[in-house]
Length: 248
Image 1 (cartoon, rainbow, N blue to C red):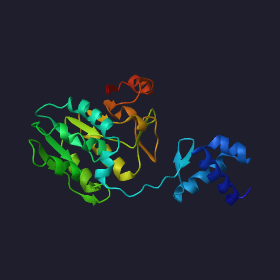
Image 2 (spheres, helix red, strand yellow):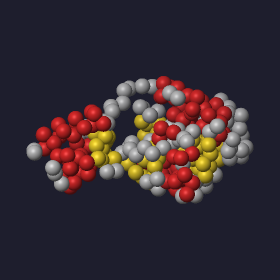
Image 3 (cartoon, rainbow, N blue to C red):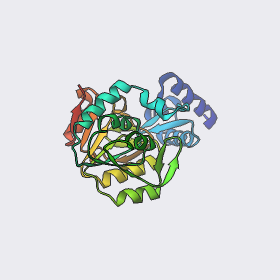
């Protein structure tokens, strides 16, 4: 069976199941796992699917949307997570906040705190600029779609400072580690983690067990996970010594 026919079969499987497994795919097509893996890598490189550990998932092109619209998605869950996160912040804290839509919703709960926020997020800056919070604006290259600053200059900026707490988001989290959809997101999250004494990951249930494009850190790179996920999805993280702060 040539590549074009294998490609058609792969797309049929993705359309029906939403995902494919390398071992299962190799058996069904009568090919080696090496060939199946190579086919999936090629299709991923062409932007036609997303590679995962052991297989691939259907490519879902994101529709254009504003950051404001994204923050309103699952707003009640995000607010519940952020209330718990805000309870961990005291006057005098120096904190990192990234550009995630959940982290942004933390702003409403900390406006009266006498703290310093170091951030790469334009919405966070706009939300907190006229409040009790002091703001340190990370410099670098603007990502208009994310409304955030990224790049080597941003990472160098972060390296000059030390925060006692960081409040971050990721695109996916599993026992295999932290996942991002781009290298620039992974790089800046890594910088925040490296220069913070304690890291809180704000993560809704949908992201628990999700593995996306880039695995950039071990799960125990964070100290605490603030989430609404059920207990049975969190046991493996607790076994790694990670504190779980459950949303009630």
